[in-house]
Length: 279
Image 1 (cartoon, rainbow, N blue to C red):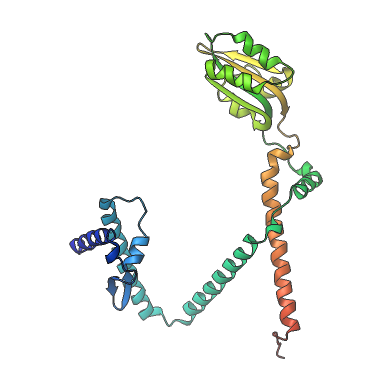
Image 2 (image 1 turned 30 degrees about the vertical axis):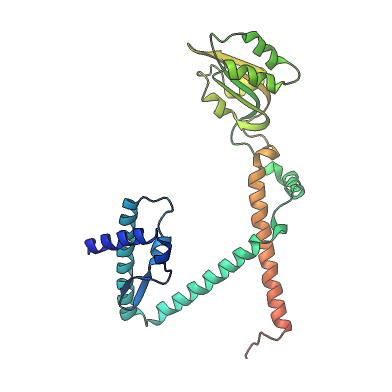
């Protein structure tokens, strides 16, 4: 059997290279009247698979298909006429059709997607429910070798009233081991702390006490400029929870749309006399 699979697999690989021999209706294997086509086998193979792997995958796929057909035929013979199983199959088919139809409906309804105005309005009405699980900050983080040149230039750039991002980046490109800009977005403080030597104070004290935090070890100097911060337990900024809010509103919009669609469908069927109750 294995040798047969190998020969068939090799034939499939070779024939797939010759357009004249390709035939989507060509049969691959038959089990008691049920047929597996070559096109089905080929469509199951990854696009970039090697010839050796192709043979193995073809063998595995074919053997699995044969076993499934044999088991299914046995099952049909022994329990196929069981009314409970037939009812379950029908219920599953109905549910599958309905679920896929509803999914396609909502995928093509652009008005379901929340607008910026909806997200902002929802946030303003519910922001007290969204508390930060950790400390956040905005700023700039630089890791500088201790022997880096012109460190005073970087110091002046970081302490300037106006942030000259291009010049800071140019300096860091030549001298720094790492630089992160997060002046316009909130990030968790823990992402910065994992690059710092161990703190000698609490996270809250670090954020509250100063705009600049500097530390060093035997190799590097670590410079953190803190432009703004939010403490654990405070109300989350909109930008930090925006994705969560968008997903929540989208889910609610989908439910509202589907409920309205079902009601409209029911009302229309009533108007057309398609629903009849028997007493």
